[in-house]
Length: 63
Image (cartoon, rainbow, N blue to C red; front, side, top):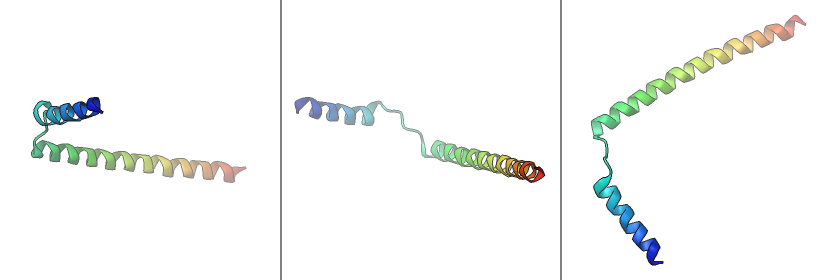
Protein backbone atom coordinates (compact mmCIF):
# COMPACT_ATOMS: atom_id res chain seq x y z
CA UNK A 1 0.00 0.00 0.00
CA UNK A 2 2.91 2.33 0.72
CA UNK A 3 4.14 1.99 -2.88
CA UNK A 4 0.74 3.08 -4.19
CA UNK A 5 0.68 6.15 -1.94
CA UNK A 6 4.23 7.05 -2.98
CA UNK A 7 3.31 6.64 -6.63
CA UNK A 8 0.29 8.94 -6.29
CA UNK A 9 2.29 11.61 -4.42
CA UNK A 10 5.09 11.53 -7.01
CA UNK A 11 2.54 11.70 -9.82
CA UNK A 12 0.94 14.81 -8.32
CA UNK A 13 4.34 16.49 -7.93
CA UNK A 14 5.29 15.66 -11.49
CA UNK A 15 2.01 16.95 -12.92
CA UNK A 16 2.29 20.16 -10.90
CA UNK A 17 5.98 20.98 -11.25
CA UNK A 18 7.49 19.14 -14.22
CA UNK A 19 4.77 19.09 -16.89
CA UNK A 20 4.78 21.93 -19.39
CA UNK A 21 1.14 22.94 -19.79
CA UNK A 22 0.13 24.88 -22.92
CA UNK A 23 -1.12 28.43 -22.67
CA UNK A 24 -4.85 28.97 -23.11
CA UNK A 25 -4.36 30.76 -26.45
CA UNK A 26 -2.23 27.88 -27.81
CA UNK A 27 -4.90 25.43 -26.70
CA UNK A 28 -7.58 27.45 -28.52
CA UNK A 29 -5.51 27.55 -31.72
CA UNK A 30 -4.91 23.82 -31.61
CA UNK A 31 -8.59 23.12 -30.99
CA UNK A 32 -9.64 25.25 -33.95
CA UNK A 33 -7.07 23.53 -36.15
CA UNK A 34 -8.35 20.09 -35.15
CA UNK A 35 -11.96 21.16 -35.74
CA UNK A 36 -11.23 22.54 -39.21
CA UNK A 37 -9.16 19.50 -40.22
CA UNK A 38 -11.91 17.17 -38.97
CA UNK A 39 -14.54 19.02 -40.99
CA UNK A 40 -12.39 18.88 -44.15
CA UNK A 41 -11.75 15.14 -43.74
CA UNK A 42 -15.45 14.50 -43.06
CA UNK A 43 -16.39 16.43 -46.20
CA UNK A 44 -13.86 14.50 -48.30
CA UNK A 45 -15.04 11.16 -46.97
CA UNK A 46 -18.64 12.19 -47.65
CA UNK A 47 -17.81 13.11 -51.26
CA UNK A 48 -15.95 9.83 -51.82
CA UNK A 49 -18.82 7.87 -50.26
CA UNK A 50 -21.39 9.63 -52.45
CA UNK A 51 -19.32 9.03 -55.60
CA UNK A 52 -18.68 5.38 -54.74
CA UNK A 53 -22.36 4.83 -53.97
CA UNK A 54 -23.38 6.31 -57.32
CA UNK A 55 -20.75 4.27 -59.17
CA UNK A 56 -21.90 1.04 -57.50
CA UNK A 57 -25.56 1.85 -58.21
CA UNK A 58 -24.78 2.48 -61.85
CA UNK A 59 -22.75 -0.75 -62.06
CA UNK A 60 -25.45 -2.92 -60.45
CA UNK A 61 -28.24 -1.36 -62.54
CA UNK A 62 -26.24 -2.00 -65.73
CA UNK A 63 -26.46 -5.76 -65.22
